[in-house]
Length: 269
Image (cartoon, rainbow, N blue to C red; front, side, top):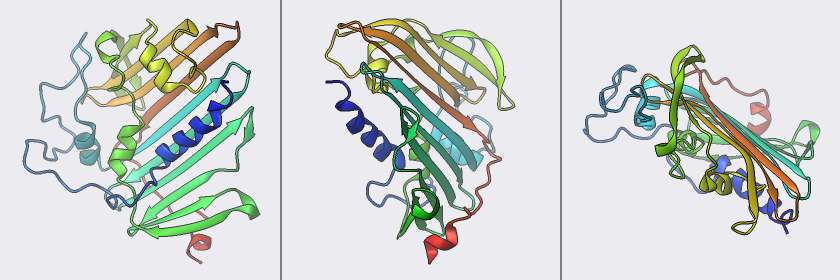
């Protein structure tokens, strides 16, 4: 019952993360009208939205990333279902809004074996180039236009999703990617987070007993989520063990560069 759902879910995840459904806006989105969210060189204009001690609050990530001009997002998921099958999906996403370039690499594996090979996308000069597979078996395509860069990056963060924010508690400060961040944790099992985020837990309601759960969010001084990690393990009604985890990181904010991939000439041929 479970394993039949896994391939469908992973395909859906890959389609969502690939961001290739339809022709969206090219490169960075147009500047919004005057609402007080104009660029500010990285300074937070919304003084009421920065993190403050015990309170978990996030600022507008679209404005902050547009102001920064470039960034890198890493996202990964690993889960073991009731049949003992391990599924893993990873995505690396780099964007330079000034040059209107972005690069994406998505991979998936089942029990450690690659599924069909990696999918790579490179956007430059308003054209998206796609490479599917590896080595001599790789195939290429291209099309005019691109996905909306900021929306794609923001969608990979889950810090605003599933109603878990109100229960996050302050757990101190630390440094991440050279930035001072505040750490927030959630240790009580959140059913919405588990069911929405895990391929391993797609059973009927009540069929999963959670045995461990952890959710961590790191927020910088501008109110931008810089790192998120989520994991759980549990037991199904039939006694089988399941687990799942995902991780999100936002790095190179303001310092990311996007170079042409080595395969670009082949994609253009």
